[in-house]
Amino acid sequence: MGPTRESLLAALAVTVAGCVWGALWIPLRHLESTGLVGPWATIGGEVAATLVMLPLALRRWRRWKAIGPLFLMGLFGGAAFVLYNNAILTTDVIHAMLLFYLTPIWSTLLARLFLGQPITPVRIVTILLGFGGLAIVLGAKGWLPIPSRLGDWMALASGILWAFSLVVIRKRGDIAPYESSLSFFVVGLLASVLVPLAVMPETLFENLPRLDDFARFLPWLILLGPLLWVPTQLLLMWGTKRLDPGRVGILLMGEALVGAATAAFLTDEPFGWREMVGGTLIIGAGLIDTLMPGPDGKVIQTASA
Image 1 (tube, rainbow, N blue to C red):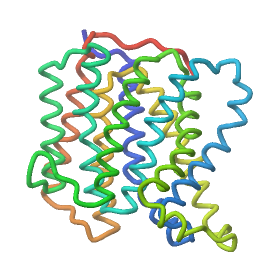
Image 2 (cartoon, one colour):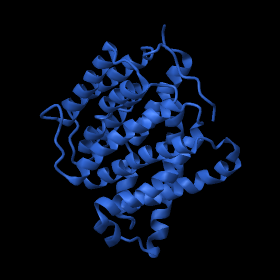
Image 3 (cartoon, rainbow, N blue to C red):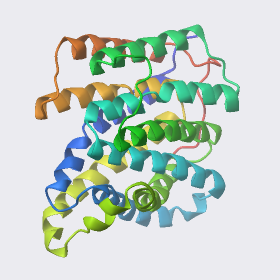
């Protein structure tokens, strides 16, 4: 049985979200030049995104249900989002992406453990292709790079937490994308403060934003939160509910290619034969996985937004 139209659209939605995320490091780093340094860029973006989504959320209050699973989605996904954003600001872009994109390993294992999904030969091939591409793009010396900096550890932890969030999302496919997206930002806003307090409090307190800089960083916060994070999160939630966690992790690998290309163009990070060959493997892994049916041969039917 081949892929359905809905599964192909879901794969496209996840891929688009991943590609946009691959360039999100640009406004994040630019915000540092406007007065929002370190964790404050993520905190500001979370506030802007939450404020934009709240009015419609209040009108949809009858749809709010399963508060426990929503909280878990926001806890795992929001914390992953915050750790990843802070990793990009404290280590190099490409290294952070490599450590985060160990996610398909964690998501496939967790889907097997909690959802009973088999690890098929096709999934093994696509994972090997994807990680082979990442190893070439990022010039990895070994199969599992060992984190050496705080930003590296945050990137690794974000990938593990993101895999947990994918399992919760798949398990509760009855929750609409809007509510699950809002949970990411609401609980993520809390995590955006608590995570820096726990791992780098001096960065948080030493770089308090100044009111005089508000006019400088506000346009970038609007771009980052309402215009980029919110629509891509909605796309991701809609697509994720219709795909298994391992497939989502592989499709999101396109973010690494976009991140590598934009970093090479705008920074001193290289973009040569490694990126070309590795990028081809990454895209090939996503295409193979997309054109194959899921482990059960079906697409999840979920509530609409």
